[in-house]
Amino acid sequence: MKKVLSLLLAVTLVFAATVPSCAYFDSHTGGQTKTIGACGYIDEDGGLWLWGPNNWCQCGQEKCSWIDTPVKAMDHVVAFDRNEHCVIALKDDGSVWTLGLDYSAERQYIKGYQKSDGKAVYSYAATPDPVKRLDGCIAVAVGRLPEFAALKKDGSLYTWGDTTGGCLGFDTATGGPTDLSYFAQGKSGTKLGEIIKPYKIMSGVKAIAMGKYMGMAVKTDNSLWYWGSAGWFGSYSYSPDVDAPQKILDGVTQMCAGDLAGAVKTDGSAWIWGDGKNFTKRVKIADNVLKISSSAEGTQNPATDAYEYDTYVLKKDGTLWAKNGTVKLYDNVNDVHSDFGGFEFGTQTLVLLNDGRLIALKGSEAYAKGEKLEKDTVIAEHVALSGKPFSSIHTDDAATRVGGFVDVHENDWFAKSVAWAVDKGITSGTSKNTFSPSKTCSVAEILTFLWVSQGAPQPASL
Image (cartoon, rainbow, N blue to C red; front, side, top):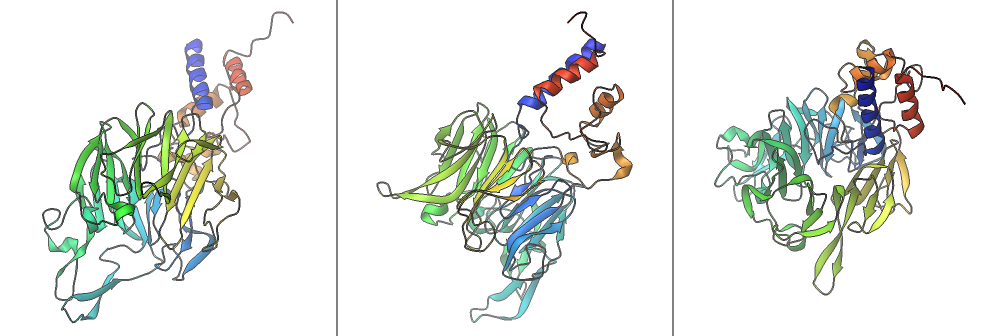
């Protein structure tokens, strides 16, 4: 039995030491953390920190045009997404909350007059208080307009928000909700163009992403589904090309959505498409890829009059590459987020290292509005890693600690293994009250663990 346990320990430790910590990460994958995004991050205790535009109180602060440095907006957060007007956050109890502009009954109010053409004049309240939207969820996303999406535990996908270009997965003229209570309404009860209650559009989903006038989902069979407008940045066409989700690709493990769209296939190849082109016209950019993230910042090619976008490629060995996977930037990378978040905060590329440091790349509009960084800059430390189970990020509860460690709790997937290793005297953690389960083991540590697991035998001779 000891040999079997030792073998299992060896496999576990070697796996932890050699596989990037985000190896299971999909874009907005159900049941996993997503800890960095436009002007925001989640710390190791589950605190959501935001900065940037706050004209809709989207940073959780009283209304002002801009927040210069990160402020804590919420606790117990495991995943979030953001655009320039709003934030959607997923808490560790599965509840979904929004900050800023959200087409919800709680925020909507109608001004008491109409335009000369009889159409209602309406707006939405801006308060720093988050609004709860759903329970029982495992992933969230928001697009540019905004269009919101939330994935439930049973694999059902719900959307709400602006319906422009079919970006919610239905055309209100031919499908979607029929009950008037789902719609924002004008003064006389006229149905307007925003959905204020989450509406189910798909089943069997495990990952979601929302972009500019469109959305995508990966189903449990790894098929990629798309809906919305394929006009995007190049043509500014808002006409819906796909009103309802349509399958466009098989064998997908990760995708990104913005002005540009992209996907990583099961064979590790990365593909991008968009810029006014038909969404079936895809270009391969790299191999051995774990994740891609595409900026909307493009360079116009005078020969073709098309934009060539900079896609960031995170490879399976933890290296990060820019310029469509041709220029190496960093080693030991956990996650990357590159986005043109809107004209309010411009372009920003954030890189999360495995040691918890968050780096804004040169050229990012990281803090001061309109001011771009002149060099890569560490803007936060102790950021939680993306792609981990929900239980790996939460506010400490002493009653649920395992072995007295503040970073190991009963509901952590590794809790039993930690308790076993401590009980057998194989390891005692990194300090009196920390085990550091996310720390990468060195070869020397692995060999020491194996030696101790065998009873620390002494050599017969030197």
